[in-house]
Image 1 (cartoon, rainbow, N blue to C red):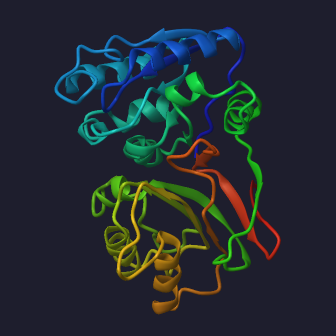
Image 2 (image 1 turned 90 degrees about the vertical axis):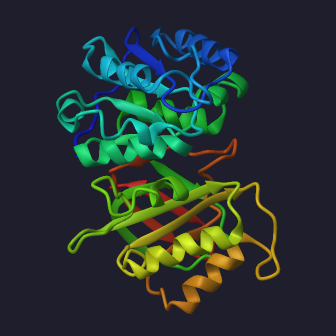
Length: 307
């Protein structure tokens, strides 16, 4: 995996809106934050519209914004303003070669997981991390913001330690970190962008998160990962935050459902971390897609670090 260059003061960061339209104050707030940090900012033409239905701009404009940011030698990183829906329109239109020949950090989560799948296919690391709203509303010393810029400015390294969860399964595993939004990535199953597929000989630490999905819907998606062989092949599993859902008659929580599913299918012998702080929450730790990591789960804590 290619590692994008570190950011330096004065570098240009492009802001794009590749999916759903975004509030202008969030784009402007993120731009102001980046400028205070010493970067030049380029708000790409379609970032603030004109919107096309629910999309930030037309498909052609959203594609052009990403490709122009990729090909512009002055732009050193690409910050996605928000997720929503729409990135799937772009991934077959942006040539893998352009990403491979111009490795730059693309930053975002949620629907941006489709772009992470594209970057992964190109063999370039990317950042599942906070976006414009977070940079606008949260203080500069927010733990996730600090972690994001430590990666961007000091190198592709992570060293996280988080509290344990009662459902955690202890162990140590290592491999390439891959994952993101479960529904978005699940929708790419069987395509060239299937980042949830684990091929023979691959060592993968998988992380998953989602929002506004019913418990039964997540169970269905996890069952597909079992039936496809993924859950039986990974070297470690990180279940991030699953938010905005309701208990049902079968399970009181998403975590209890996942715990029962892993037991039912005999998934054992690997570390499993529940409720890890990544996803649609303020405490959204950046995850380096494509990094080589070690996941250690013991009774007292969970650690995730690059190796």
